[in-house]
Image 1 (cartoon, rainbow, N blue to C red):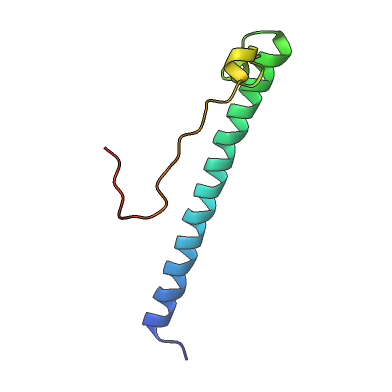
Image 2: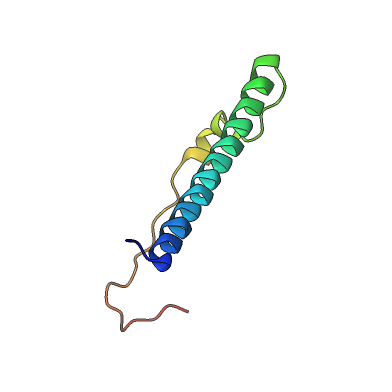
Length: 80
């Protein structure tokens, strides 16, 4: 024979899992909607946010690495 407390614990656990599952579906739906929106913009030829950051061409001067400075190795030396 089950006690009333055991049944309440099982119901609380089931409710927690249902809420958790709903949160997972909600986050998945948000990501899917964002991906569908960006895909639609790309397909119709509109500007896609952040796409210019991936296609940016750098000039030779911009691409060139800056000269490195000598850094202190030990922690007892402080830079100001």
